[in-house]
Image (tube, rainbow, N blue to C red):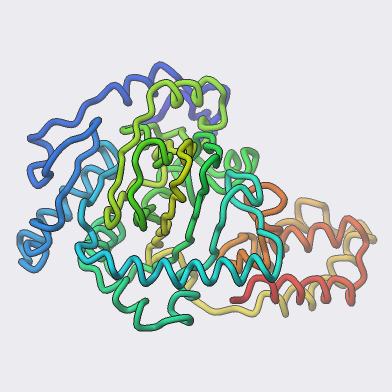
Length: 393
């Protein structure tokens, strides 16, 4: 069904987003009959006790029923759910925390903190690519940490099998400020202009390509600032166009809820859910969460292509065509789109942080800049190589 914010050309217009329609969606409630496997419903968010539910994940039929319920919650229900006691043995988390604390200390000693998404650089301690770094530092700890059937089941419920895990540790100290309301990866990590350049149906696809989660490595009472969540907000289709608007953010601040978490709990949500990290107003709680960002197996091209090599070969010809007026700007852009990598991710965010907006410069953007600035082939190739070095893990 076409939304009122969707233009006749099939794109979302932020100015046409309907706050009344958005409010009607978030006015919904979660009924117990909708989530029979939930142990409780807290502020419309279903809460599942994995200490009792975990054995059912070993039974094929029941496992599918539980996963189907989780999928309904994430898609058309509250958009967020909590798994209590995801880790019943929290010594696994303690071991990982010690490894991560060592990594944080080493990285802080080596360089200033890198830029962060939706927060000022240095406002917290962030470990990019916490997945690989944990595995490299202690494969045994990594094994015990991710040998978790509850996490595997929720990932498969939303994404299907063969998903790819990534993780970023976020340690927010007392006094850490709250974030502004936003949506997440993919379209949530783009500027407003870039997000608006994608047609409406792509806005529908983006949320089903990733799953957001957080593992509580410590108890998180409300004053520590657990994530602010707006149940049912993921159902507003033009939300990637709307979340930056002041009136939508005002509704979020008026209506958001927070769930206190215990060490070993997890929360998972649809990346289209309006959410934001809360302010840590405590005096002594260092809020430690491992943020899981899990990707669908389907977000990949069929062939491996050396696009950097193609760019280096193409630039002199593109430059010549531009100078001779043989190809228009639009025609050159079309050729660049077929040649260069146009997306910032995946990248190594330690070396390639999102310092200019929400995402690093892409090879395609570099190619366009090279044409605009009249960059010579050697200089272009050097910058492309440097970019590749930053992107590689």
